[in-house]
Image (cartoon, rainbow, N blue to C red; front, side, top):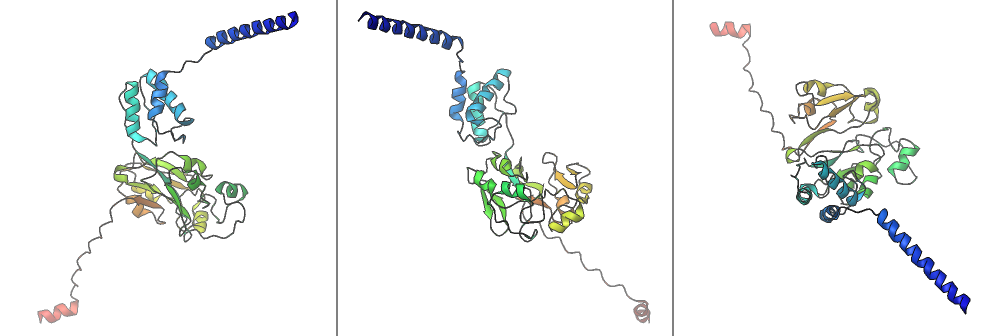
Length: 300
């Protein structure tokens, strides 16, 4: 009986000592979370898309609080919640809201079924990433859309659909939050998160082919061939650069005059959401000049 009682007492003492040690350790190494992190997290959409550049909404909330302690939210933006949510975040943290220009996903490929004919049939897994790992896909272009819809599957907002007539993904600008999930899913990097532009208008080179002109032209009728004509039309604003045989338009410098679109011989440059162009006025026909015989007859 005494042995049992002693064992119980010993175990009880060990339990009390262990509890005391754990209590001291928990207080010593406790991580006290700033209450503002929870407040900021509450107003975030909890999409956890990673479009802000942080691991989920909780990570973004912590980053915002840290930035607020430094005095500014510059560079912090929630693409899903947009400016209204960032205004709330700024109010919680006692800072002035930082305006950010809206962005949208743009598919930089115009390699439709008509422009870029299929010359092979891929019977493996219908995944762009798998096709990229195994070869060029079903066309001769090693830079264009593979058409399996990995980007569509990754978009949790339903902003992307595959167009069966072109074989390319289509972006619904009203639903797109510019979270960047589709851009990360594309193994060829043809989807870019660009400035949406005033009234949603923007001019983009819809090509990602970096091959030389003759090669690019052979695999796609609408590819950029690196001729540089668009660059010459934009010498005043320097919004277009030509690198690795591919033209690129800087959205912040572009004045949207659309002269480059007219100059492109391949139709690789497209303007989005512009009103229809006005037809050019026909020049009045010049009266025919009288011949020498007609002049002599008139004088006679």
